[in-house]
Length: 320
Image 1 (cartoon, rainbow, N blue to C red):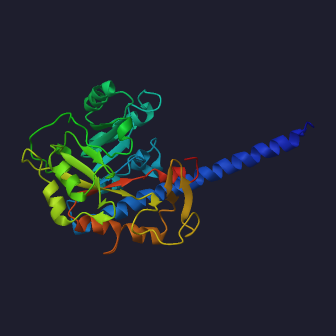
Image 2 (image 1 turned 90 degrees about the vertical axis):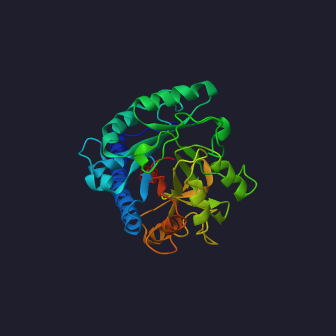
């Protein structure tokens, strides 16, 4: 094979070009982060204008709690005025089975500025469940733990940690929660509703739909009572950072790049695409009108919305 020799000047030029591209990527990421902060605030303002008690919980993207989405800066007070809780995934148990110290340090700073921090852990061994719960409880975080057979949040675990018989009227009062956004293990909507009614979780995090069938206000009202008779909260999942092919809003002919704001395949999820979430067409899908996703959640009687993929601002310009 013929060797290619690069002159010193060419090498320097390549370094300069790569540095310029890296700086441009970071500038785009920062701009997208600011737009995500604005997006979350807009969703909250719209929701709370209809229901002042509506709960907003963004998942991941915890840097959004700071000015310029930079943890070295002061807190962004307008953002915290808009949200009620913060959710993260795999904090103490992740691929390395060690705590994510970077995020843990940030969450320790933020926990006194929200009503509750909730954590979804993923463990490979059943024996790790109690340890994951204990580690989160020691930080005053509320934890849900899933195992390999529940990777896609499609099962109701047999045991509830920190189960209680108290009425739950506010996010700050929860001591446990169920994360169940995939209904594939239930043959019918009624089967799923009955299974949920037969639990004592303080908070149910479920999807707005059973397959393509939206939950009704009456059905959600039934879920707001635990098996033991006390009250609980019911929150709806919504993906605000990625478009999903199986959702009602997906149009024939849509694909990567069409519309132009469908920007990037979501690694690991073949039917999802990262979007330019600041595009007005996408915003109109999510909130602000009677046919919007958030309005459907409110009309169904949910106590709040769980905003997933708030960290998409980063992955638009990086791998993932």
